Image (cartoon, rainbow, N blue to C red; front, side):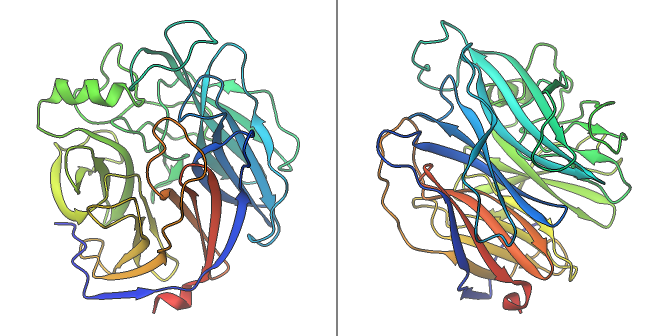
Length: 361
């Protein structure tokens, strides 16, 4: 049973960088941030909309840094499209001397200039796009990978070398080390499901097909003793769900409920260089996605130490549809003994928190 019954809670004092802080009249929605380290520089990407979450014309911005604290002026990685496409930052993947940048893409029914519908409905055309770069500055034209998914994270390498994408209810995998071809769709049964897209509408529809009492999305995994444990946000409860794979991501067990508390929000799982397992999340069951914390485990099951990364209840400055929660959707990387955690703040600012791994002793 995976749980976070903490015997120790401490507060960190990280260095903080603000990558994006929109003023009135600018594009004031930001979310889905992630980090990469490529050829000695840090890269951040995030979704960016004019006002509302996941509105038509949403684009993807990115910024670059030499030290993770001083960042370049944001630029468009995926420009806003006139056809009304919703573009969602879907993470990075580093393969040798190539940096891949992924974006989920879908459309709402209706005209390109219509307001977005209330709720996650009327999606079509969901697919995954990718751009590549050899220097982090000049980017290829986008390639359509023809995967019907808006990923939770970019591809990650399993212990055996296979790449896997964490989605909502599907977890595509490939043995292509470049992360561009050969993708096959695995995930929660029934999978694959004809006509079903793995996006913020499709996972609700999949819940009705399973009829197991859970409505899950936004997975992130821990690999423990050859078993892939996919933890998933549980929309109907404040405890994470879990599905396991013991065949390298090709099939997955029925969902079970963990003892890991969560604020009904996206989180990020990782293995630290010292061997410990970490989950970066909003672990308080109620409240405005605050605090942001990192929970640690020696065995990948009992997360009994918690360190608070951010606790200040910052006010939202700009109105917008579905702009709840303070510290939203974290992602992290470890570089040279330092942890870098990125998240949105009130779905408008983008911040990076930096602290040494030694602070987690």
